[in-house]
Image (cartoon, rainbow, N blue to C red; front, side, top):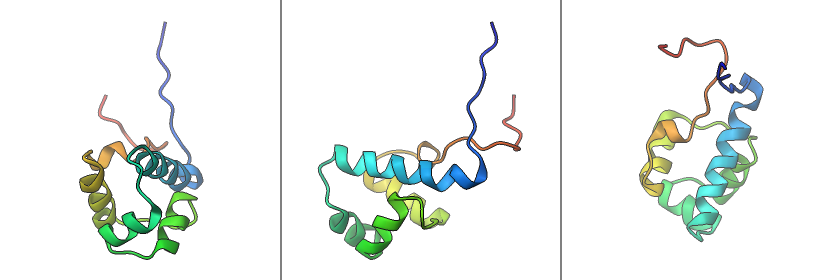
Length: 86
């Protein structure tokens, strides 16, 4: 039985990232304003990031990862069209 990997399309990438960040924030009982102040963006940016309407760069992803005690790759979903090394 083969295992199929689940990949997201380019247009879904930031929606999945936003969902993951929202789940991480809520699991730690943090307000969007608290996260915004910690990572150095506006609360509106957090709202837009969590809804997938705003992209994030690697530096901001690293700030989120540090805040939540996870690795950057835990935030990003696998994408289609890229070699995965296997």
